[in-house]
Amino acid sequence: MVNMLGNISSSLAASVAMNLGLEIPQVKESFITKKPPAVSMANTTFSPNTLRIGVIIAHGFDEQKTNQILDQWKRMGLQPVIISEKLGKVRGANSTEWRVEDSFLTGSPLLYVVGGDAEGTTFNWKTKSYVVETYNHYNQ
Image (cartoon, rainbow, N blue to C red; front, side):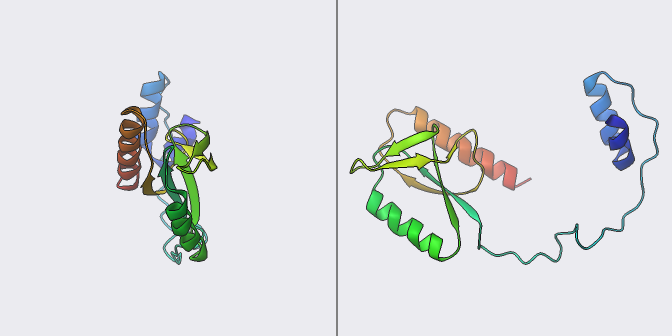
């Protein structure tokens, strides 16, 4: 596997090999720079349609306002994803339960924080951490 990396980048292969305690591969790096158009994203038309957008909520969220926002996004072609501290269900202010599709550990869509009545500071800390991690990943 490290030999295959060496065909792409000899410095990357050397770094991986050193960190895994393997011998540094003695392969020549490929200098082919021509990319087939099917592989390139240069000609991609970017659109919000089918874009996953995360909705971070905690127990006690306002179902009516949240539904209004989600319905509007769905009409625009966006795909809302419910995110919370844990997988399972989250209960709104009127006791309606919604299925949590991603947790802070499993999700990575764009974000929109709706809110809720979070108990304690753990939820708030994890929310901030998740937002920062997502931002740092996007910004690299």
